[in-house]
Structures are given as structure tokens and as C-alpha cells.
Image 1 (cartoon, rainbow, N blue to C red):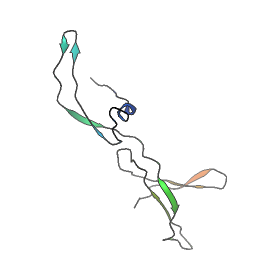
Image 2: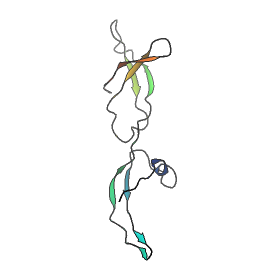
Image 3: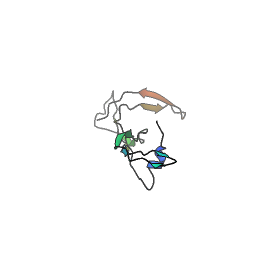
Image 4: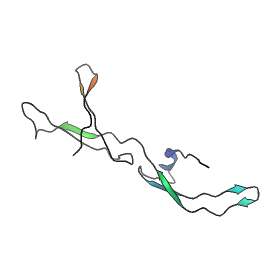
Length: 108
């Protein structure tokens, strides 16, 4: 048997679980005669989602030269429950349209 639980219901009262929380749960069975004993505790569900938007995106003048510029940012408050594995950098072509400049940018 399987079921799904909306993540949104776990993030609000009465649970108030933060992103990345492990979900420990038990299950009981019921028929017309009654309810079973409670199962052993199971774990294997983690609340996962996309990461929060990076913040404080600014020029980093430390590596600035005639051939390079530096940019820096911080991770958002939540990583979605799994480590950030990639950043993609896009730039404005001056028309409000953005083109990907780099991907697989390693955060430091």
C-alpha cells in the first residue's frame, strides 16, 4: 500500500516542519471490527523542494582585472533538502532578455 501526503500540509500547523525534515511515521489498519496495533516507526521520506533563490548578488571586486570580473552571492535560506549542485549565471543583453553565460558554477 502507498499514499501521498501534500508537502504543504506538513509545513503548516500543527506540524510546522522545515524543508529538509525527515518524516517519521506510523500506520494503523482499520476494518469494520476495529483498529490494528500501531506499526513500527518508518522513516524514508524527506521533504524536498527546489532551493530558495540566491541572495545578495553583487560584484566582487577582489578578482577584477582587465580580463575578468568577479560576482558573488549567498545561498538562499533553504537548499530544498538536498545540497546545491549547480549554479547557472545569465546576463542581460540590454533588452531585458537574459542569455546563459555559464553553468556548473562551483560555489565557494
